[in-house]
Every structure is written in C-alpha cells, then in structure tokens.
Image 1 (cartoon, rainbow, N blue to C red):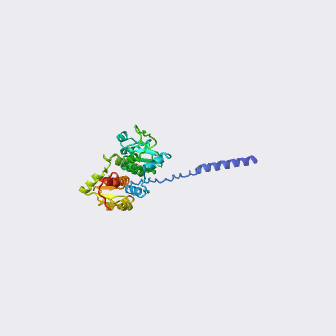
Image 2 (image 1 turned 90 degrees about the vertical axis):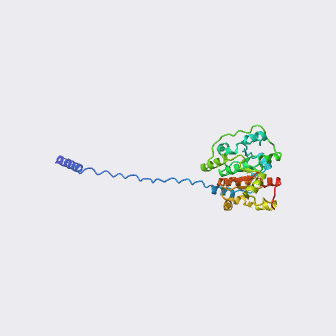
Image 3 (image 1 turned 135 degrees about the vertical axis):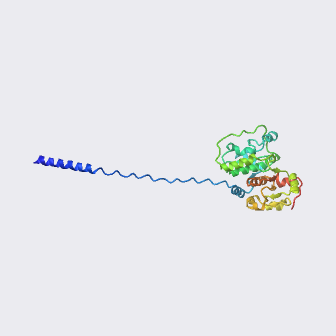
Length: 304
C-alpha cells in the first residue's frame, strides 16, 4: 500500500513537469536600451576684441605709466634683479654698449621669442635707445598678459646721461625655456605688428614733425595730463587727449588712414599711444621722438 502511494506521487510529479515543459519557459526580460548621453557642443572661443583689450590696457595704466627712471632701476638691480630686455638692433649694442646683464632681443622679434622671457608675473624692464621702442615692446608684452613690465624712461641714452655703468662686448645670449600660455590670436596680431615695424619705428624727430605739421597739417594729439600742458605749454594746434582716455575719444580722431602725430613729455606715453592706435587700425601714426621735451630742446615754438 505504501509503495503504491509512492508510485502515485512519482507519476504526479512527472505529469506536472511535463505540463510545465509544454507550457514553455517564461519569456526572457526585454533589454532596455541605454539612455543616449546628449552631445554638448563645445563653447566657441570668442573672437579677439582688440578694442576692448586696448581700452583695458590704457585705462589701467598706473601713475608713472610703467616707466622707470634710470637711477631707480639701478637701485632695483641691486636687490630685485629684474630681467633686462634690450630691444635695440645688435649693431647698436656693438657701437654703444649695453646695461650689464641685459638680453638682446630686437623688437621685431620679441613676439617670436617669448620662451626666452621669464614667467608672466616676473619683473621685466625693457629699454631701447630713447624709450620709443621700449614703450612699444612693453605695450605688446602687457597685452599678452605680462603683468610686471616697465620701460626705462629715456632709454639707454638716459642711462648713459646719468653716468651709470655701461658694459661692452657681447650681451647674454637668450636662453630658451617653456613657452608661456598666451592668447594665440593676440600673439599673431602682435607678431605681425612688431615684425612689420619700418625703419625708424614710426618715430619722427621734432624738426621733421614741425615741417610735417606746417606742410601736411596732420592731426596732433598731446597725450599728457592737462596739468602738464598748463605748466609747460604745448604744440600749437594739438588736441589734448590724456592717454588713459584715448580709446574713449576715438570719435574725435580723423579717418584711420589720415596722418596723426602723437606726443607726450619724453616719448614713453607717445610710443604707447602710437602702438595702441596702430593696433586699432590707424595706419598713419607717428610719435615725436623724445616727446615735448625734445621739441623744446630743439627751440621749436611752444604755445602757453
């Protein structure tokens, strides 16, 4: 009786298994496709706004306009050891000497040799013969993000006039290092500008400026502060637009292809203003070499 019950149970189990097999296996779960991650287009880099860059540079000029007098530089060199950048031509150094420790990178090649300069926050002092090229080079470096650049007021000539020591022979060779991170578009614009500077570097001597003023009537801009004009006088017919306000007063200037002459006291601000206008598209701008002081020294007429 017992074995019969067991047999009955086995048959029932076999029948149940067969029924399950006939019913088929439960359906496999449906695969859920992965959620597609939306593609985010990279934000395009804004185009270079040279007007905004020049305006920021000019408005931010400190008192002293990043010039440094030779005697002050001599004192600084005794402790801080700034990087000295001589932007004259090699022939000028060979004939007149240079400041001990300076590295010679002619101005037309400065933008191509940024790897020869220290980090962008380190002190750099630029100089040329009279301050004109030094001001242009300092302007270019500051537009590239160098934050601690000064130019010798009056250049190497002022250094020697102050009877400060002059080295002769061969200056230090530039040493290549890491290339700094700078705006590529700004670098391209400044390299084109610097490398294309003509002989004379768009400076004009006082006598030549006077002749040009009389013959061709250029637009003359005095970029000094009003107090300087009140105390020292000015060139008759010039328009006073202090350098920090230059980009805000472009509407007062003639067309971009018309002749413009810029001047300041010694040529430093004049060189910066000229470079700024060149970079804004003004194609016929010159700066008086040595500035108003050179005009006065040449015994040219002054309006009080």
